[in-house]
Image (cartoon, rainbow, N blue to C red):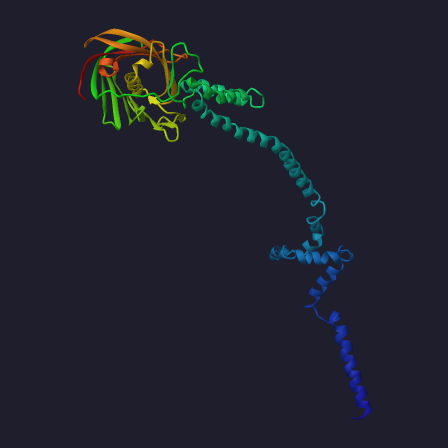
Length: 420
């Protein structure tokens, strides 16, 4: 190809390139004038030329997901230049405030932490309070104060309250010394003291006993209840077969109602060994004996009590006393004291009977000689019991008189007897 042609083609190509490069901004006609104006307008904005927005641009790119809602409007583009205020959200100023807020709860937790130590020992102290209360359940078992459980409980609580002081050692000493005096220890056996004998001369050897034959005794009853005099009838049913026994006493009175006591158990060489005692007026309460463990439990949910050999209930005690006297009358001259544990429906206590001597009784069944035994009250609310045992009936009671601390009494006088 001739050089002139090549030169001409080269010139044409260069002209086309120059036209393309220079014609874009200048030769777009009126249709392209509008976008050119917009480009020129954005280039003339004063905030954009600042170099600082360069680092902010990535921040804006990261914040881009937030403004997409704005594009729906026709004029969202002025917003991006105003978004330099957006860095105020991540600005470091709000960050120093949270630590202050965090310091406040820390101070609060420190305050509560400072308060918790004093509350903890008080809680422990209150939790330890039931411990002396549990000790109260043992107090009536080791002492004769079971007849006055309120006094025992109050004294034990007061001693527990003064635990840091040496005073609480006193009840312990009393409990330890209680067994030394059988008259105050419900776990002791039967004690027999001759007339004029000192406190250390009581005999604890199990005395012999001879039980009377089975019989049914009927009584006339005169009594007083809350200053109201009444008359009633009573019956004592006594049965045994040489190995087991059953005793039942019931009193019935018009407008007063009925009350019964029952005692069941075994017959041993030493007399009666109760297993269950029941006392029923409207509802029945019972005591259950366990001589193997040396304990008696109560259906009334009162603390169990300790018992020893020869312990009786409030019904069998009258028959047991007669069995002791029937076996060896010479062993019990006037003035002799017989002490044995007597169990009611709620607690156990030591009862001491003193032999008073023989009296002639004028009974509904006729004149009857009987040996009187008396139990005098030892404490304020103790009841007084008087018992007359008739040798002609195998030393079964011919008369029983029970007097309460408020003056109420019941006087049972034998009117008849018959086979059971």
